[in-house]
Length: 198
Image 1 (cartoon, rainbow, N blue to C red):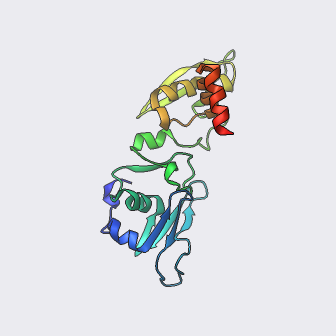
Image 2: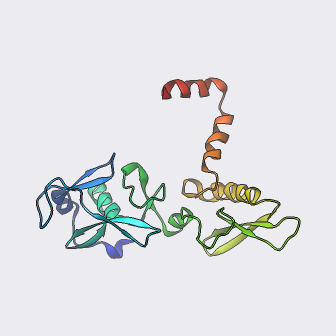
Image 3: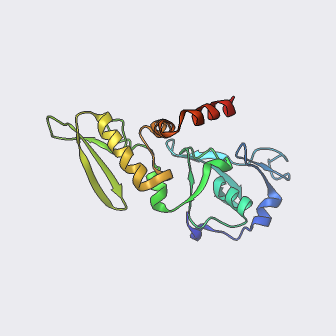
């Protein structure tokens, strides 16, 4: 959330209360509090069953990822905090990034109302090409074309999303982007990558 939710808590105050481990994403209490032991994990998972977040009570409830941003950067986030993998409980530092409302929405999961199983794809009343691909930019929905299969339409969506939204795009086939990038590398570069990974 933007700055309207920034309370009177400062980074120093939160750092006195909580320890953050950027590799696990966990917050732990530095001090004993009511019903809380020093060193115990701070917060609990809250949400509507579909979108979950960790919330921590310091006088009132705060989303853990916002407190983490404050601890690490010393400032309340000016924008939304996006979870790269779309798991609101994964608060590893490598999984958190600032995002505008639009960027955050590009990274949303597939809608429950979607019956095709692919983001940006819906059924169409076209007998020869029964699947339609669309992409939304701001409030404008752009038609990308009609396709013979849901997979073809999903690939068209991915191509457009990658071009328009970059790293914030939620893709239907995210690993294909990595494979395409590897195909562009010379064989010796791929061998070096394999050796480094071993």
